[in-house]
Every structure is written in structure tokens, then in C-alpha cells.
Length: 212
Ligand code: AIR
Image (cartoon, rainbow, N blue to C red; front, side, top):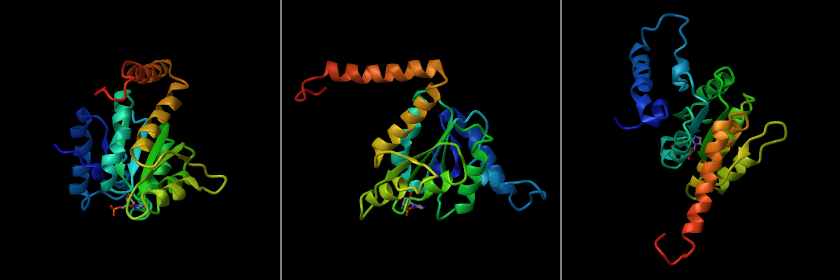
């Protein structure tokens, strides 16, 4: 089964079948749902329990970059979910996602968007769950537009902003790991091991002319 971030699924391949089944069921039942049942929770990509970090992106075209955040979180064994939500194209669903974040126990939301990147800020305005913004590169301004839109939040509503593109996606996830590590000794140990491996990689390959 190919991964489809537009459906909003739990990270980790073992979860895909479980995660996508309710979504498709939801789509099928959309016209016959009893009054009072809130299907929009599914529409907002709210998929289940044990999700600690949400990885959101403004477009499915952002997936190749934002996948790096998911890869990091999965490598640390952190429950996460990936979802396309746009501050402009699906503002209601983005708001709903933010509104539910605290009660779901999310520790952080990583939000990547390009161009007039308002996703991170729009989420931050609706939740006290920390928002980690990743500006994404696109033509013609190569991410400078998204960087400024993400980092230049007015005082009172912070967004932690990371580097443009893949480095930012990776670092946002590592930052979420570090947040979790403040209260989780096992995660602290894993993060220390990750750093140690980076040092080891440099020490073992000091010659820039070698293949590494
Ligand atoms: N975007 C989508 N909705 C609001 C914004 N800012 C961003 C996406 C993507 C860029 O617009 O995050 O990086 C272009 O989107 P698309 O779908 O046209 O490729």
C-alpha cells in the first residue's frame, strides 16, 4: 500500500492498515452518518491514541521533505501521525486539529509549509501545545517567503522556527525528541546515543577526500 499523507495516517508501516481503514470507512459513511456524529475529527486527521507528535504539511507536495521528520520520530520510537492540512485551503480542519491537540496529549506539532506559510502560526493561535515550524522551499523565493512568514510571529503567540527544508524537518523532529527527553530518561539516553554516533561518524571519517 502506498503512503498517502493526504489521508492522515499514523506513522509506522504497521499502523497504516488500521489507520487508513477508519478514514475510508468514514468517506463511505459520510452521506449516511447519524446526526451528532462528528466525522470532521477524521477529516482533521485525528487518528487515534498514543500519538505524541503530529507532523502536518500544507500540501502533499511537501511530503518528500516532511518525511524526514517522520523518519526521525519513528527511529526514536515516538508515536506520530502525518497529515496534509492547510491554513488556507482547509482552515477549518487545521483549526479543529489544533483544538483537539491538548486533550489528545500531543507534546508538539511539527508544521511545514511553503510560500505564504501560515500553518504553524494558525495552529499556534489555537493551542498551547508547542508548534515547531518548518519553512519549505518553493519557487520563486526558495523558502525565504516561508521562513519570514513562519518566524515573524507577533509577540504573544510563539512558533519555534527551524531551518528551511529538510534540515529544518529533521531538526524539528530532534527538537521534539529533546522535549520528550526532559521527562523521559530512556529518550534522553537515545538522544545522547544519536549525538554520540554523529561524533563517531566524523571521527571515523576525518579525510574529506575519502568515500566516508
Ligand atoms: N501552502 C498550502 N496551503 C497554504 C500554503 N502556504 C503551501 C504548501 C506548499 C506550497 O504552498 O505547504 O509548500 C505549494 O503548495 P502546492 O500544493 O500548490 O504545491
